[in-house]
Amino acid sequence: MTSAMTQQFASDNYAGVCPPALQSFLAANASGHEQAYGDDKWTEQVCERMRELFQTDCEVFFVFNGTAANSLSLASLCQSYHSVICSELAHIETDECGGPEFFSHGSKLLTAKTDNGKLTPDAIDAIVRKRSDVHFPKPRVVSITQSTECGTVYSVEEVRAIATMAKRHHLSVHMDGARFANAVAALNVHPSEITWRAGVDVLCFGGTKNGLPVGEAVVFFDKHLAREFEYRVKQAGQLASKMRFISAPWLGLIDNDVWIRNAAHANQMAALLHSLIQSAAGLKVLFEPQANAVFVELPLPVIDALRGKGWKFYTFIGAGGCRLMCSWDTLEATVRTFAADIVALCNQHQPTEL
Image (cartoon, rainbow, N blue to C red; front, side, top):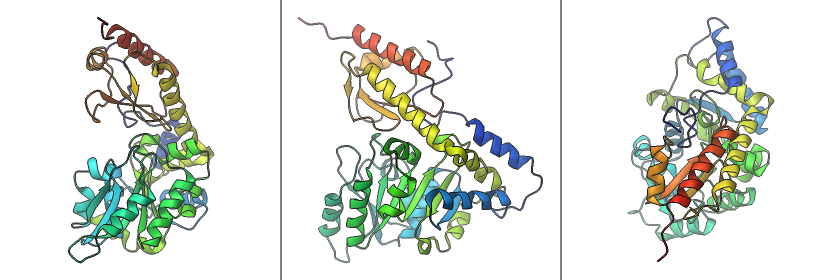
């Protein structure tokens, strides 16, 4: 295997645009002149389809990427003296370059230690009760990632329990749903069941990792919290003048449940990869794979050898820790080839018994 391979396991961002989304993009392009800045028929249609999808009257906005979606939505929920409770592994804490703090003008992230990336009601309660004096940033929001940064998934009951605890302390609930589709597919539930029906106030609905060319949706289930959000989008440089080219591809995902099929396929490929490599010599599975990611610990010589063969994957979770991510278009043949290389190299690099 060489670096000329066309599929990788580093990120679902590596994948291209799925055909239905591309078809919708091209249809929007062929429709002639349209009004700018979101006043076009395509954006209006997608917003209505989102309301139908979630079975509620929600406010929908589109931005270019997940960092903007998370940062701007959290800023809309907080004043500068507030804080956001999240997992220590949350993307907003580890991978957004201080974006949530920047756009909220200083709201602090208060992190809780987690074993599998999932925040718990007890952890939320402990942080809220830690201090209540004016010298401490007042908790205002709970943020959870669905599916999590560890590839695990919050059940409906877990989301409800977190939201119940949050409401007890008068906190809003934000969901980073960069891989929301994968969670819905894994749980096999209606998307409303793990969002507004469970107590979520705002969802950052990821499209890029599910087959879109670019763009995420910010969905406010509590419409009051969306007041003047369009001004935040504009000020942050996230208001697309030709908005239809961000919004229209969503039709290709939502219509005919393409978004769920894409996510289910990615999940299935991750499950296949896990089943093929879990017994390899020297390999340790770090988290139970529930969505489209497999986290394993590999001997360093195996990691080096895999990269020498041209495979790409991330190792940002400590020495030997590897994240192996499947996408909407991951081929079974690619999974089997990758798995075979992992198993062969693990066997080759087994420690010699004395």
